[in-house]
Length: 375
Image (cartoon, rainbow, N blue to C red; front, side, top):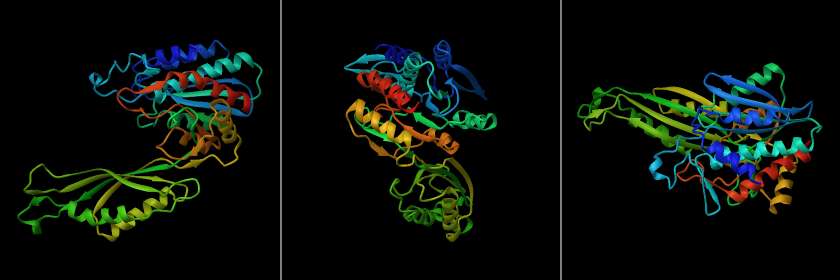
């Protein structure tokens, strides 16, 4: 029972802040290779990725996770050092404990148990890990999927270990995610003295009516699986710091989290039409982080994961498409059914991030049960 705790502690102690891996992947690869897993180390730019497989043919069931973590912030703000795993009051503390070194350790232990007990299992089971999930995610799973397309590697089912639970393990599974479309908008003006506005062009004044229209726009109504698309401005910057200077430029950072009721192209066209209607002089840099995806209701993996939560956790899981994005957005376009199941997400990215020791001990049982029911 201590295997998953020991491995989680070992992983937390490694300062694998994106894109550093700090030796997490070689550690895991060594454990799996001893059990007959085929190991592929896939390095793209400064990012390390690991693809470990056991078995042959289909179906291909992959477990997906990341070893990188976000920065700890001021270490003095933590009750105990963020990269010194500490257990107290039934919780294991440390950066990455919940997001998602605990899940990674649970996946490794579950796979070890499964192939030891069933060395001749049907199909293929795999573990895909990256050190580039918390950052820009350009050379992690995104590029691995491109490599898979070139080599003919398929994935039929994928379990993502992102922390999904609300208050207890198994109370919520992610059956899809919204897409994410970002815009860096530069509004052009003419700098000048505030006392002579006729000789300048204030980009703040020019953008304000358009922003009001964008914020008031009803982008869609959502559908049975997704809430309506949301629009948010996360940052606006303009000005020189002086109160007597009209700025020459404004930069705004904007994001849409969109459902299957909209498309990225459609949102872009509508936003640009609003800007044009208000006469905004601008330059736009668009970035599509990922399209929305959804595991079909009644899909095999979706039913199995819900059943595992029901049988092993004694709870009927909520099936949600909420939250941010995950690397599942890169796997779903391969034609894979993608479900996310992991520990409680209450402390992720926070000071004193932690995971329940009881949940951590239980998680390998859930992942192993998924293997048993799927293969």
